[in-house]
Image (tube, rainbow, N blue to C red; front, side, top):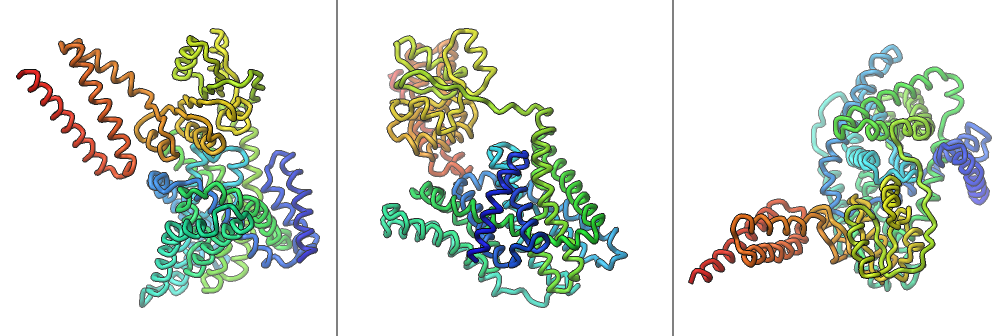
Length: 592
């Protein structure tokens, strides 16, 4: 094992930097390294199974970390996207691929049940490849990144019933009974993860004294990830799905950031070893004997999945660039495909030769997809309006008491009033067009992305007193606020909210300085309208002030059930009734 570990690390150190320098990203480097050192290459490492079993934990840890970034209410908001895009991608892809295999493979002895299972297996995409591929290009927060994640999450959930179909399809008949024991075991594992992640784990962290003993905290973090994965696997569920559930449940925990910091190093290394094991598992001799069949299979797989995903993404978003990026992220086969083909062979639905060919097609697609995506990002996306990577300015002003993030129509007003009182501030703006306009009018602002920690540090966040987040993008606002809240507890944070929903999301992070961008202008406009209609200035001011106070109170009250639409409607009706009652009482008192 020591020699094997040395070979794996050496292959990583050599292949990955070369691949990244060539512009193909790190995943291609891992896969090529696996092919070269594996049984089909130099045969430096031959025990592929042992490495694959251990490195599969990298995928598990990846899903756990993603879960930590997704709070439960955000997951609930994504439910329509998850099921809509997930079904829209998986089912048509499986139907087209299965039909193509049946039409072209009937002469080779592939039955309709085998074609169905092959189509389903090939329709899945690799979570382990797609998410790191998007993350290393900072695309996870893009529309295409969020949509790809939704599809992958749906596939994680769909894999269990698909595997359950294998014995049914191999028997060509309906089962005589429902495996209630397996069903109950799966439900029990889900309940155990929910209860443990929601109630028991926080207690455990308090008992060990939090992060005061780093090595114990790291051990507990790893036990949590591996334990939930093992529990899900014992129940017949996806290990990565179990870890993802645990991550989501702990996303609101006080220990969230410490968990992320402890798990990330293990996740990165094990995920790299996972890709190497995929490359090692490639049957190079089979590819040499049937190059045309394998190349044709990969071409059909990629073409079908790209076409289906593009149409689904275009129908969902109406943006061709986003739809193409979404489609090009998902054309490869999945690690789930290997499991499904193995189960199909065991049940007799596929023979070993068919499964070997399909497995090689999947492995080859895993190598081809990152290269295709990298080429598209380099050659295609720039022609579709992709912005160049910005080079941010060096902030040469001294420390100031105020930092303004986003110097557009909101941030400029704040800055002008501060300047009127001769209060120094540092303004950050990442839109080069907006920055050019500001400089024509001699407005001082620096080109920088406030959602990056090093930019906030350079702007003087460690010594500043106030941070004003005035950017117009909701996701960017949340990232900046969360970053500042975590790293600069000295800052008083005031953030611009686009609407009530955005205000609640910012309140989730734990800040009280949430300012809805159109709220005060709407109040002033309403006051002007009331006076124009004949109300006295005092009556108009009193009405607007009363509405403001009650609406701000309602915003705080509804924070606890922001995702419960019936409760929100009921609260809105109660507030309207209360306001009407107060105004009627005022009117009666004035008349008397």
